[in-house]
Image (cartoon, rainbow, N blue to C red; front, side, top):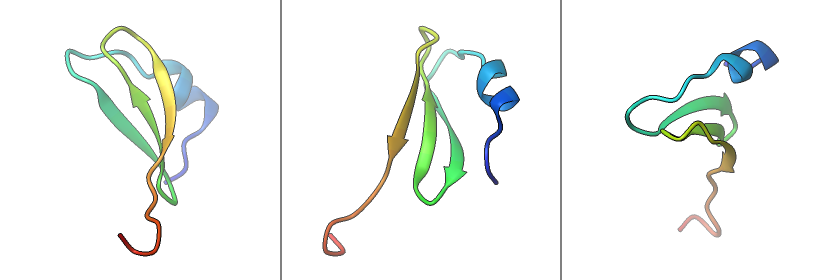
Length: 47
């Protein structure tokens, strides 16, 4: 499921970091301090 702007803006920090998936290996990491970071999970040559 793709994230929309409202979901990103309303993502609140929790006691532990958590991820909101956007599809294709892309996700938003929400840290306990309120920081929001885009991350891309990928593999090189299947490793």
